[in-house]
Length: 177
Image (cartoon, rainbow, N blue to C red; front, side):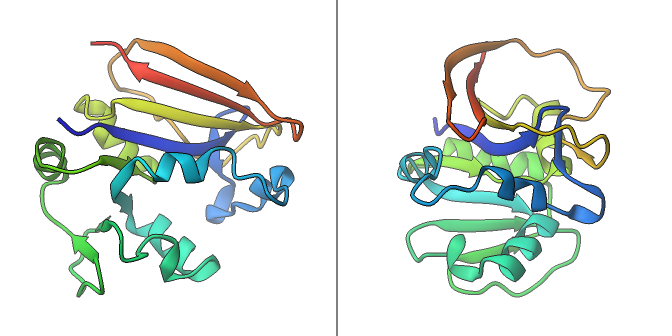
């Protein structure tokens, strides 16, 4: 069975975005030549799922090739249907059943790149296998929380913890069954 992982950055107080989906705080840890293991991680995946807001932000700020590089399938979870392009598909059906089908299929692992609503849905149904959370050394005080309240408890096993000279700390956990 394919593994589904999140690989995401958050503030020390647990926010993945400031109000109005502002991600400027991520620039605090930008360093030329440092990708915090992202390239190594993406070598292990061939499928990306993400929410439409995250997709639209990356499209605007980085460009389409960030996700759809011709080597992996990209599924944008959305409430409204849109035509696909290249290997990018917009999916508006039952996300839980869809992810179960993806995990049961053939291929490399699956990467969920957010957003918070999608991650929350996947957590509620025990569909996330591994968590790579990079903690940015800032307290934002408000914004979009990485993990929402109101879900059941889940125990995790620490696989690694890395520190970087930018102050970023990266935690890698696996879900305990």
